Length: 272
Image: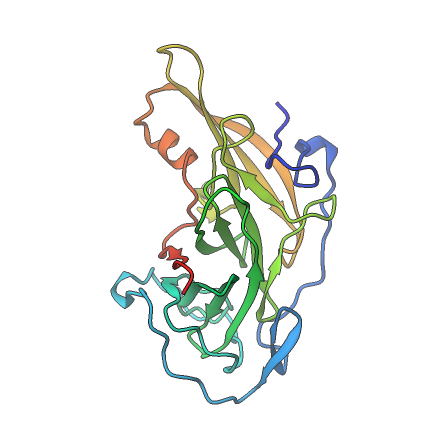
């Protein structure tokens, strides 16, 4: 079955046999001497960190933190806006420490950002999809270290990666941002489940749909293959993981969510 993640031409639209993985050059987090915001230098290394932002981050809800795996991003960058919706999430810059994910909206400017445990702060701006008034976001580390962010608009979820101490759009083979549909025709959700004997977390798309009147649900899971630094994505292996199960089944529930492992969900505040 062909998968079409997204209702607009240019999103990831083909099945695994039709697409070839585009690899990119890896970037070592923290290797830059400046924090980049939308491609523009925001602050040099050593900038004095600003006071902690106000928001909804709950340190007690922080996910399990693995041992340090590398050097985090250098401290600095513009302060997180007051009133931003903040959530503690997984390690996004490679130092093994939990980081913060945030969303902010002011005067029509909508921002998605990260504040790392090392004190680095960087963000990107985004526009809405015309259907959901407010967005939310989750993040996690998959595929041997790639840090991804799913920006959720209820009707679709757009994919980003954290690489080189900045947030970058993950693109499909057609040069458009990769997005997951959340309708009933092509897809219903996305996640980062642990798959296989090794328990490696993989980025996946789900399609959970009724199979007939009173016959329960069918759930299909498609692996999303990422390039080395996560800036390219394509549809990979497709697998049916449930068939004829009730709507309350855990496979159906996970197939209708946008979630990426342990960690909080950042909520976009109303325009301030």
